[in-house]
Length: 175
Image 1 (spheres, rainbow, N blue to C red):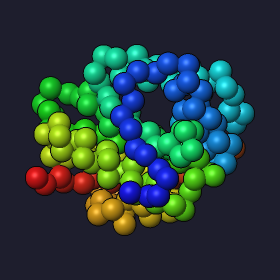
Image 2: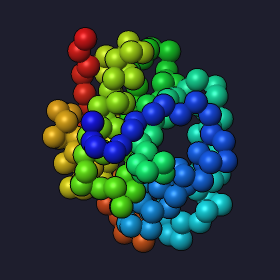
Image 3: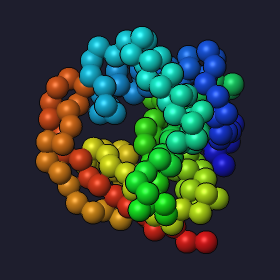
């Protein structure tokens, strides 16, 4: 584990958790990350997103993990369980976010390993995700043993409106 960092599972999204998770989301978007949001990234947009995640969490549709340093949320990742009836073995990894102040300390690796462990505990054998091609996250997944499926050009936009390609990845989990 990265020194001074704790990875925890979020049980519910109260005001403290929403504020901390929103801080991370806002920082990532303001830093140029293509994670579903455009500039300007407001506190209201971020809080509304995390309230929705909290509702989905309460329904058991996902697991939310977060990393803390000095009692502040520094990063997060989600494992999405909700899926079609014919895919009970699969889950999605989403919203891998690390605050810029906490990058280059192994936090992304730790969050990804924790997400994979949660999926194994839930008896999932396949994880899927997508990320901006050529990004730091792209390199993180390759380093973590994820397999590239392919690239989709102009799949999404950067926060400034510039189109960007996305790479789709999967990882087969073993016991």
